[in-house]
Length: 105
Image 1 (tube, rainbow, N blue to C red):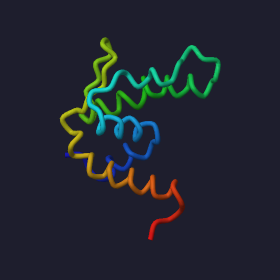
Image 2: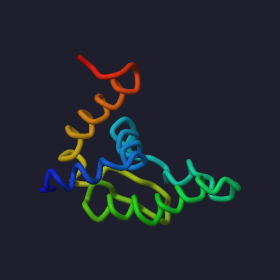
Image 3: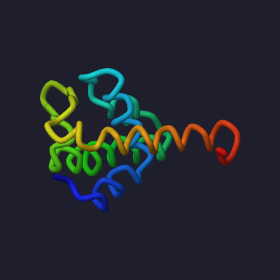
């Protein structure tokens, strides 16, 4: 069981949330670091690719939220994904509501 504080920490990062939302919609996913082309000259893009591969994916895998096959570059829902999904959905809905026009009623 993942404590609520750990779930909130996991969802606190935009890139982790986006990966998890994508996994909720389509499982499995090809390696999400491909979205950040590390060969580009944009240092932010390079930094995000490095962070995804060395921080975010290992963190999610360590908590059983994802299964990450580094050789095949495939990310899939892990055994603890279902435990996190209700909070992910709630956070995603609130984030969308705030982005689409302000604070919801």
